[in-house]
Length: 101
Image (cartoon, rainbow, N blue to C red; front, side, top):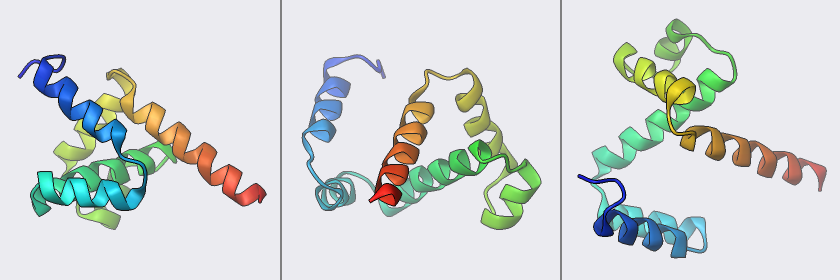
């Protein structure tokens, strides 16, 4: 599927229209299977652990995620389009801003 086709753009626009974590949860629970949501959440967790300096063995021991998934996430972090990096950096910024309050 073309990542920049009209169907994908419609999906991305729908996601961007959501205004809260609750709305995101409602939308993603409707559009994804529980397994798809778990896989996405797991990949983000792996990205966070890799970003914090954890190695593959530690991540596997803590999460049970396959080495293939860990490797794929690491490859995306290092050579991907930067989506993980944007999300991770913004999440860190939001966390730091919440700590300052």
